[in-house]
Every structure is written in C-alpha cells, then in structure tokens.
Image (tube, rainbow, N blue to C red; front, side):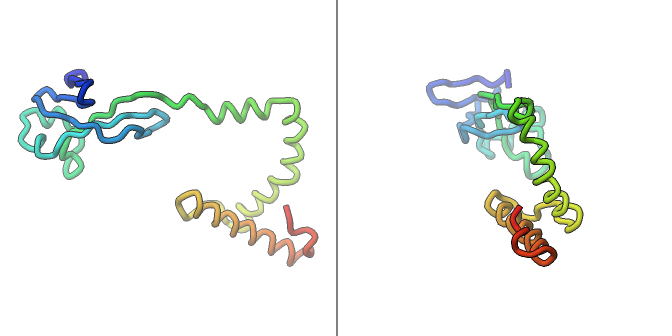
Length: 152
C-alpha cells in the first residue's frame, strides 16, 4: 500500500506502474473495520510486470488489484455493553426471573425439539423461522396443559 500514491483531487490511487485504481465503494466492513475500496481495471493488471507481488489471490479471483483503505473502526463492543447492563442493581433483580421464565422455553425449543439452528438467512426469514419455533412450543403447551399456559 505504501507504494501506491493517492490523488486527492480525483480520489484515486496510482500503482507503482502508473495505472489508476478507481474508487468503488465507501463502506465495506470486515471484522468491525470500515474500508474504502479502490479497484484497478482488469486489463491494466493482465500484462503487468509486478502482478505477482501486487495481486495476492490466485486464479480467477486475482484478475485485478483491489486496494482496501481503512477509514474507521466500529467502536461499539456489544458484549461489554450487555455485561455492563446486567451488572446494574435493577438487572440483578430481574435476571433471576428471566432464568425461571424464559430460559426453560429456549431450552425446550433447543434440546427437546432439536430446533437449535436457523436454516434460513436474512433477518426477515430468520424471524419467520423463530416464530414458527415458538408456535411449535406453544402448540405443545396447549396440547399438554390447555390454552391458559400457551403464552410464555
């Protein structure tokens, strides 16, 4: 990356062989780090003399140079946020209720019904699948105990 020169006016990088890498996307994210992506034209990289040292991917995927420039990192740590939230006085009073009310439902769905993974992808589809799991749980409760025990 240090061999590439940045042209601020055009928002492009120039490779050591003088070829231009054009701005492609603003917010590519990998492992909590946001990148700006710059791509070379595939025809520029085909006959390049320093291609092996520049393009790391082999075969079909390594047709052209892609330069990923980190611009910011995601500062939120969700695990620490939840740990801090649970460590409050109010949460210490509420958490034992959750263990008694909600966790047995999750355990029943996961272990007794073997519904321990989502087979679909995407928020909407996973939400639909989760609702179906809950329906299975509630139908079993109705069958065993009656409708007054079905919720929760």
